[in-house]
Structure formats: C-alpha cells, structure tokens
Image 1: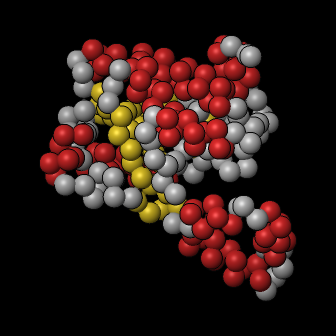
Image 2: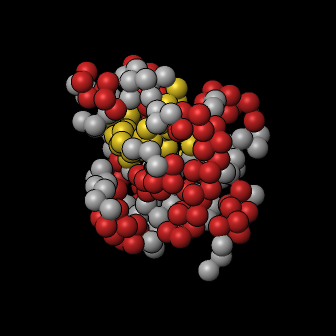
Image 3: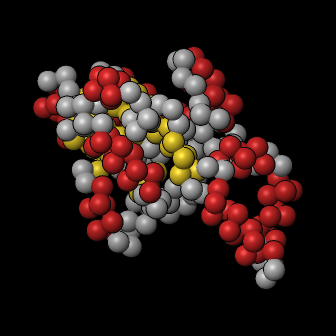
Length: 233
C-alpha cells in the first residue's frame, strides 16, 4: 500500500481525473491537516479553532482534520438543489447517457440546460449557521478561527456562501482547506479570493470515495457510519 508521501506526490502533480481510494483520501486529509496546522497554530494553542465540513464532500476530510488538530467539528449543509435527484438518477447509467446525448439536440438541449441550471442553485440545510439560533451560532462559531473544509473548489460558489455564513455567525477568521482547487495552473490569482487557502492539487478534481461512481462509495458510507456521521442524502 502506498505511503502518505507517495499519495501526496501522486495527487499533487496529476493532470488526470483519478478514482481515489479510501486510504488515499485519508492520507490526503492528514496532509491537509498538517498544512493547516502551520497557519492556525496560535489559535489551536489557544483552543479557538473549529473545523466545519461542508456536506457531503467535506465530511470525511473534516473529521480527519478535526481529529488531527484536536479541534471540534461541525457540519455545514450546502448543496445544489437538484443533487438528491441527480444522485438517484445517477444509479441508472443508460439514463445518464441519454441525457448527455439529448443536450446535443437544438430543441431539447436548451430546455435541459435551463432545468439543469435550476438544479444547480445552492440550497442550505438546517445545520447551516444562517438558519441556526443565535445561541447556537455563538457557541459554535463566534470568535472562533473556523477551518472550512470541502473536497474541491471548482466555481467557488459553495465556499463563498459558507464563508459569508460563518462571518455572519461571528467567526473571527476562516481558513479554507480543499484537496483540489481546479484551474489554478492557468490562473494562480484565483486563490486570492479564498486566502488563507490550503490545497494539494491545482489542476483536476477526482472521483472521490463519496462519489457514487467510485467503487469505494459503500466503503465510504460504512466509514462514516462507524463514526456516527450522517451524510446529507
């Protein structure tokens, strides 16, 4: 089994979309934790750090980071409004292929695009800071250095919304940690919008264990269950 350094090397420089194993996800999460520790060291020593994982992509990573930093972990529910439907439809491969082909037709394609755009709107769950009670917000995030964790940044919309929620809840600082920040090889300045930011790969996101098309998906769900973590399905 490859060690942590080999896994980090494999994913930090790849241009290929890889099927990540559960062990690789654990190794990359530990690497992320060590890089975050250097940024948040003073607040860690003062006991002012909370790790916030975005469901579902950040759940496993955030748990490992929080455990490594000896910090409490909370969950922020932000997802695309159609993610549960797409998750269900994703089980039927022929339907997925049919939808992809339908996008090519001039009459049907535009209708599908509008539908997909509606499904891509962000929605929040009942654990997000914006809808929690004031008392809950104070206890979890006020005057805390929040380490915000997700699997990747593609458009950045989810992270931007989460950072605003945390600021509204009284967080004194937010450090973002992801495995992949897509597209940085073409425009490194994109990272400035999320500073301070910790990431491992700046090229391509991957088929993570929490992706249904990854063979490790059931193993991932079992991993969460053993730790009492419920995915947002």
